[in-house]
Image (cartoon, rainbow, N blue to C red; front, side):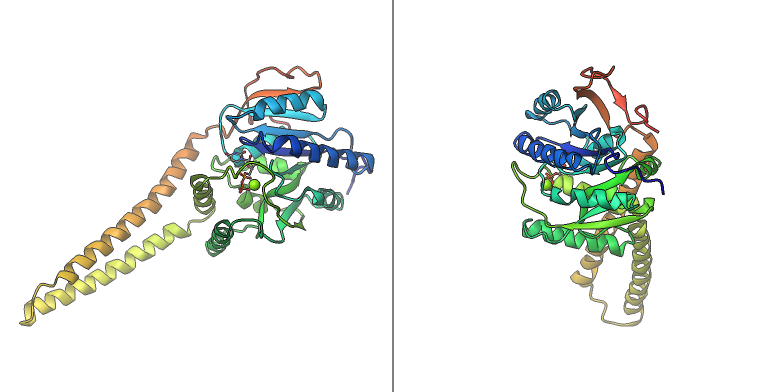
Length: 340
Ligand code: UDP
Ligand code: MG
């Protein structure tokens, strides 16, 4: 493999930011320091950049990013036209960055950036994708920890291949990013897609810390959405489960009907019972609603995908370097800002 000489690799960082004004100054201080160290030790080239993607924040995040882009020539700020969600903000950054490899990391620095040099080392040794994997989740709340564990197990049971205890902290090389572009689904669950890309992949392990400042931007609805997307985007098992359950219930109800008819026609103890009439109503009603819900979930997915809407829209881009787009309000979709 033709690996460039040491110090010739541009490694970009992509940081999605949603209402991160509290965390951003310290985050940038740490990321810039790390980058300086890696450039000085010739591990990465001086062309490496940091992309802050403002995912439609309502606080001071964008003005902070603009200021950073003026004071630090390595910073590019991307502003999405509204809140598109974490996954789309990541995509916007991954597809805009031009480095040889791109590392995505959350703005709250919960994921230990000290393992970034190790990620770069793995990339240099030939890995196209390097997953950051949590060694412990001790700093997460018990609720988050347990729901995450349950969710991983459910995904696994449904046959979705994901890397256990890996969130969106990873390095992807140019080839992997180009491959990711071929996956054009709108409901993107990167954790499920990236392992499907293939290529040589390795893991680095770190301890997850507490959020540095501010509070989690993933509220319960956002978490649920991501969880449901993760299942319905990758697995038809729930649909199959529904049809099997429908069949089983159908057989049981035929047996029940036969039994009821038998009692009625051939015995004298046909006292209409409350339980035997009410229980099946609840039971069947429940199952039907559940099945409808699952069907609806997949139908909605097909509906949204069929529209092929853009996954994100960039409304502004700031960077110190004097390019044609610097500072200009330039709407661009990922399909137009193709780098390949
Ligand atoms: N984030 C985003 N858009 C959103 C929600 C979150 O870009 O709609 C970003 C957020 O700024 C952070 C990352 O996604 O950089 C992870 O969010 P957070 O740390 O709040 O999630 P948690 O660590 O609690 O799962
Ligand atoms: Mg976090």
